[in-house]
Length: 119
Image (tube, rainbow, N blue to C red; front, side, top):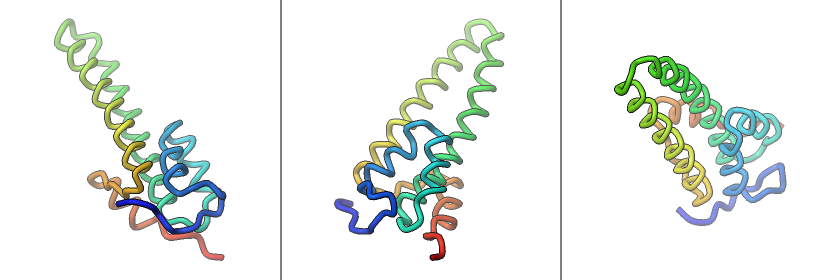
């Protein structure tokens, strides 16, 4: 997509702020959602970060429970962790590239709720 021209209220470039929304999961997403008032791009990534973090926590709990199933549970667990890490890095990369990559369901919710806060 290229360079994002919209202004942020944080003074951080939008693509860097978008990447940072994912860096510490729901924590950084919540911080940027609370402090960013102008950039729809950053707010989108903040909301999507919070949503995907909640899903990842649920997946981690399920994957941990599967550890008690010998071999098959371990394989599923390892694959789940690898998928989570790949998705997390992919989302940071897309934000850095200036793209509003929408995940199914979570992305639609993020898009609908990412309007800049009223002044």
